[in-house]
Image 1 (cartoon, rainbow, N blue to C red):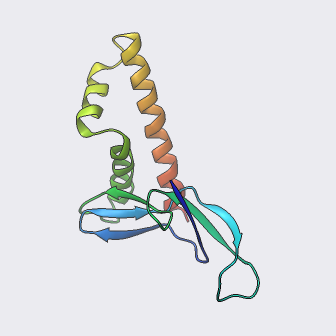
Image 2: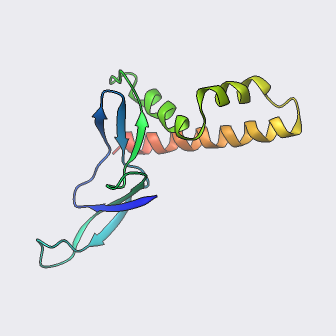
Length: 121
């Protein structure tokens, strides 16, 4: 994971036709910039890209589908579609499957919280 500081607040930006950059894990930050004499107030973001963003796969995003596409893109960073189908199909029929389902649901809820926070900036 990479953390980067920005003078301006960020939320998301379209990267290319199949990807978006999400600026997650926002924290208030005070940092030095060469062009400024004194430290400045801004924001830090932590993600997998050099600028602190997290790249996700998301196509055909509209205002109406943005939330669900971003959540699905974040979930897809950890769980492939095949893994998601298997976890949901297995349910909690065994203790092991139940644990996998609980972990998936916890991650899914975290993705929802992260996207909601990002979209409410």
